[in-house]
Length: 159
Image 1 (tube, rainbow, N blue to C red):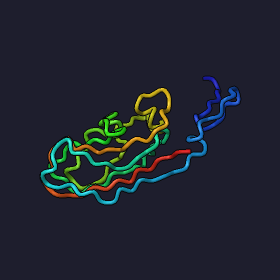
Image 2: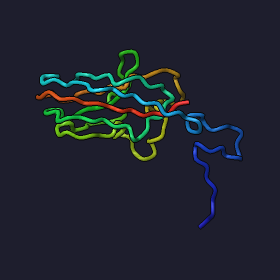
Image 3: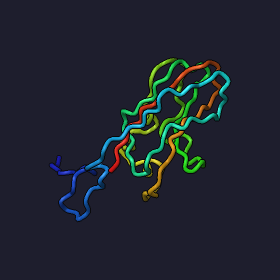
Image 4: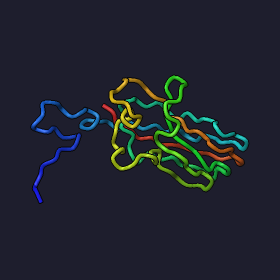
């Protein structure tokens, strides 16, 4: 076994000239707090809930949480991204969340180890930062058959 030194993205590798991206070193935490969003019985599949705007360079933190009552019928809920009304990814952050029993879910439930901690543009598969804001959008993929409420707290780091 070899003894090695490895440097995280947040630490300057002394062998390189480049500084680490500021979001990883000096990122400031921001929070989107949606307040209660009412879901009504009869809200149909493909209904969208706009949760907030996030810069493309933001790192959405894994402690971001969606809290919800028992939303009967909503067995499939996605959290994705839009830009100027056009869907970029319907389920970039969370896919297939079951909201039929009251509880809470991770806003970034879809992100696997290795993807958590990436900037939003990287999560979307882009090589460079487009320098824009994206809308975070929740989409019902099943019809709601009872009234209920959901609320999101989306924490993200940005420079």
